[in-house]
Image (tube, rainbow, N blue to C red; front, side):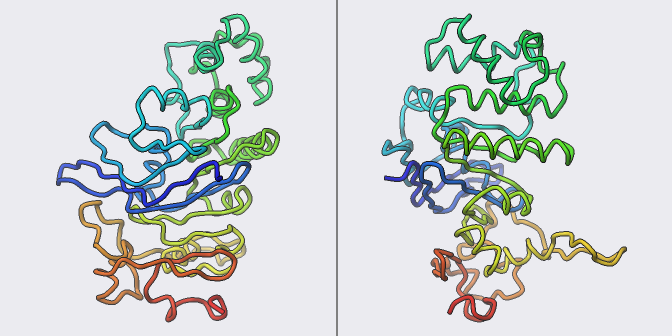
Length: 328
């Protein structure tokens, strides 16, 4: 049995223009110790998908489908059930550490909270565990900084504290929602190496959300490409990188800066912009921006086409646009 199984997940939200589907029937599974990356433009449904795993959606959100974590159904689960899992068996590293940490509470109190709630540790024992966690994630002189506040740390240190908090109870699944967005390149590398080493060391499953295809290539074993609340391409990371088949995936890769390119040249772009949720077509969500689209793309929901190496693509024009030899 997989650690996490998501099937036909739909998430509806109320917008100023009426109800809209933010996630449209996605599915994936994750085994213990596996690593999964989710990529796509802002607004494609990445963050709301992982928030649904934690039960962190707005109260007005409507969720259908199935999310089974270690055999337990989370869709429709009580708040008490979700509280028992959050911060305990599922840990999450949020995108912006300054907003994820409470500015009026000390670090030892915040990192130690899941240890007291889920493991029943005393304040003194929790303090010892927090010190060990801060040492492990590389906070310098941690012993003298336990009673400091978030604003007294740098951005990179705050993100390390967020990682320590997510790891406090030794979760089975770690979710990292763009954990390096607010950090400079040097700190980004350190944080990603830290996450990789901790996942390998503790045998956790990992879901990593990132805009950076290079990060995905070097961090996760399989990936989902999302657009408009749908998964348009998925599979082992090596297979997707070697034979990107969906026009949206091809557009993402074409837009990457290339070493050695002539100075002053313009990067390739995907024409148009992401439509609002209420304006998504009933068929392929990428139809309005795709140069290969025909009328049927707007009205027909594309089924998954399976390529070699468990590589799935949702495009009804795959035969016309797939790179030569991929579908062999």
